[in-house]
Length: 243
Image (cartoon, rainbow, N blue to C red; front, side, top):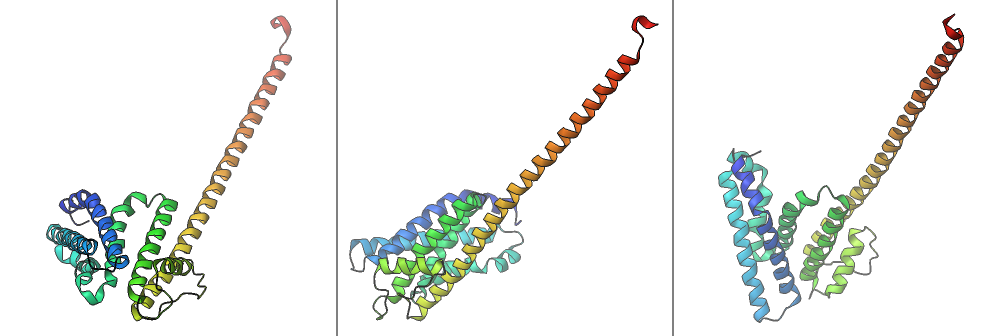
């Protein structure tokens, strides 16, 4: 859509960006779960900056290769926000959007045809990342979510739209994560319902085709039997010996 060079670059960067996104996720989780300053905390910060630099380079290269460049820029403002906003300390929430967006770009094209695998994988990733994000926002603010286990449980019941109410966010950032997760849960239910409906329609269509094929075969057999009867009648009506 924006030129062959851009398409080749995006294909070449699919796997490197996937690996970078996974490393980014590990570093992001380490920063949240390992709160004490030390080797792991420093290493996580270094990984985040290095992978972010890769995301930034990828964005700049795609912008330079895109034709027409202005249209690509306008239609990829979210990509620009994903690159710029996570580095601002007050907007750490955007970091988990970076992870989801990059993995979606790399894995989405490969798994989108395998609806079940894609849906389950995307949901599990969303639950884990949202749990990390809400724990980062809620811990130390007197709310009910103060451990990773509580955060995962909350994310699970929220994305499935169950909402027991035993755990809930009290900060603005935590509630923003909750809203996103609720919308994701509704989308998940829609995908599952659409997949089931598509499977049922496919099975009914195949059954109808088989029924139609069987009816045609019966009609062909009837025609052949009628033709054989006519041949027998004609052979009986002919005089023996040709007289």
